Length: 228
Image 1 (cartoon, one colour):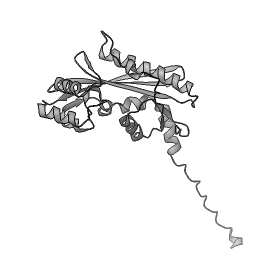
Image 2 (cartoon, rainbow, N blue to C red):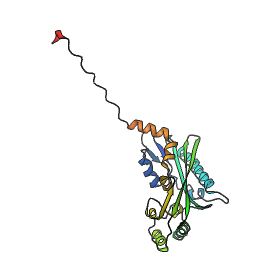
Image 3 (cartoon, one colour):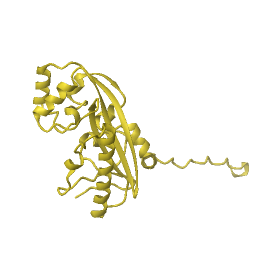
Image 4 (cartoon, one colour):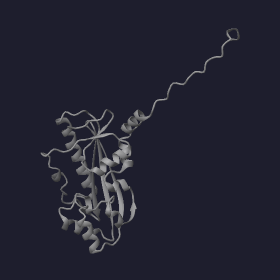
């Protein structure tokens, strides 16, 4: 059973707990609009030959937006804006998605060791037939990682399901020497861009949260002399 908040709210088409926490941080009310078992999300995320990292995240987020819009209609759910996001890591022109296993995570971490890379997060907001999207890019530089660093991190289980095989909000924060861009974008949801795309909804929500001013008391007029 989907819990649907009172309007205004947005649908979040992501099961990422990080994205959910970031939306809560900026006070955005949302309900989850998750893919069903019949949807092949992995097929959407397969990299195509010759695709640049920017082309990749744009294509994936727009495909996810189309799928989320169809999902909303098929389930006959209340109309509201739909927020979709996709994050990938790129080193040069090489796209690093989610590792398929621990060995793949080790490969990615060794590739990132001591080098700079980009984290690209694409956002899309669906309002009826209209889709608006943005791509936010951040630069991250890792320190050099020893084999024991890599092995211990992979053994923690944290790389699983993470683009590039790491989570900056977790233990991998110790690997990061420098960031240029959006910390929340590296986590999977750049908050400035999100707030910009959803500005009307945020303003409406904040208006509802603002307590109304109590009526001002009008001071009583002094009684006339002949009434005292």
